[in-house]
Amino acid sequence: MFLQRASAPVLLTTFLIAAASAPSVAQTATTAPAMASPAAMASPGAMAPAPAAAPTAKPVMASQLIHVSTCHPSLNLMQSGGGYYGGFAPAPFVGGYWGDAYGVGFYQPPVVTSDPQLAIDYKNISTKVMKHIEFGLVVNGILRAEVQDAGTFSPQAEIKHRFGISKNVFPIQSGLPVCAPLRITFEDGTKWRNPRLPPKNHNIYYHP
Image (spheres, rainbow, N blue to C red):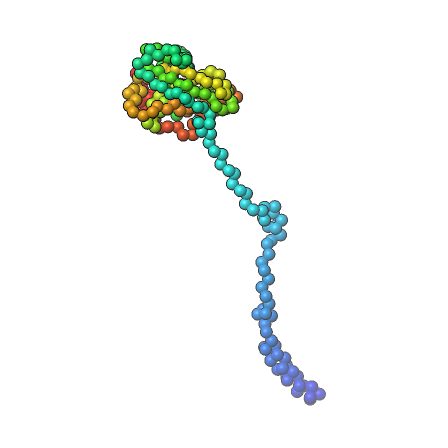
């Protein structure tokens, strides 16, 4: 009995020394890798790549729709013949005004032989019938006048029309005049507006 009581403190001391020398479980334990939550893994788009950006459509340019072979403004004309016929002339009851591609009311004079005119020879090179075309007379990169034509303009049909223009257009000075399409309405109801409208001389809106 005495031996058992005496050995008890010895065993306790031995146990405490062994416990102190053993490596800590917390120190030897390795850190487990982080895992995504079940909800995130279940999401359909969790692992899907980001959608690619949609390609930007290239604008349709005027040169893809109309080919202009002649653009001839004249101040003193008495112009007749040459295969040119009178183009669109605004009805008298609207006073010759119409809303242009810039969103401004523009006055287009009627075709009168003794007044300035603009002769345009052009062709519809698109695949669709055109019903309404607005042209801009551009000189040295500046819009000097506008005209509009109305009718049925089939693909590949050559059109030779004359239009009344203001005396304010002249003098034109140097520079090759260009008749640039500004806006087109097609027979199917679709519309096109020139994505590169030229800068304009604001005097074009003054009606003499």
